Picture 1 (cartoon, rainbow, N blue to C red):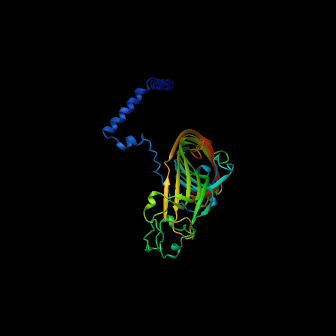
Picture 2 (cartoon, rainbow, N blue to C red):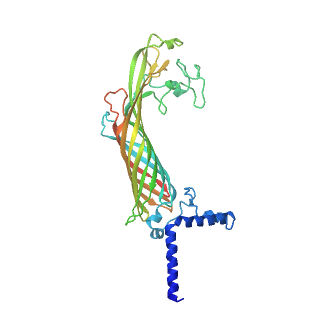
Picture 3 (tube, rainbow, N blue to C red):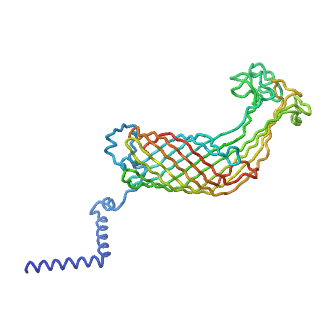
Length: 428
């Protein structure tokens, strides 16, 4: 047989085999699988080798080397050798920031265009896998307490017995005993309503009317992704998640009156009081509106490195259902004195505290808004950095703020919080 005929025969056989694989590939695969299974069953090869090449590794976020050398020094040469993608964090990270935010007042308050300052905290915790995907949690709490008021001096300006420690004096439950029994460690005991104000050698009523009293809490859980770096080294991390926010607004009004008041029947026990006695009364009205919001959000984080500095910005848009409640109640505190005149150091003879039955209201609204922040970080060591920036949280509508019984109060008000942040981050 000539060489030419042999080559044509080999070519024909190869074509037949190729057509057979294309026409009946399943049969070939079945045969290969049966052969491999028989080899494993008779232990011709190791059982571990049978499955090791077919099983993908499980993605466990805890199965990474945390390397707790957070303060290991880092040098300029390290920055020159690392690309932005290599410098971005992998594994677990955490951060803490102290917040100083200014919040807007309720619409019905005087000076509703003003912002009042408050303090809070922000905690971040999350991880990023080598596949550039991960999870992130963040918690924020902020408190703002802006009151308008004054200190109203009581009819008895001071308790001289408490200052001298000689006697409890007076009736109406005079503390540790009418004879002046000492009470450790600071001398004689007195009921709270008979004492001088803590830190002052005098007695007064703090009259406080709320202007902007807010407690804000927020918790979010986000799924994050990291995209490929841009041409100049910037990196984008889209996110989508769920968020819970609670916005509590307190309305408070206080008033002080003094004069002759009817003696309560419960004061007929010794020392007995006349039908009317001179007294002072403090009325406090409080209405607490709670806004509990549940919903989703989406946004992104963008950051870029420049030597030891990192510029970053985050933006989120949220939409939530707001489940609102409001509780209104009135408290009355009346302090009685003996006779129709009061000496400046007289001891009260009776103290009466009463609270009205609370009124409740509820409502449901739709709330939406955005959360934006910008930060500048400075890397001190390989994993530790300090940072500062600004943050704005705007709930565009859907909040209940103000008194329950006020017909002019709307249930879909707006709230803005804006201010600065300062903190640190580890492996961020």
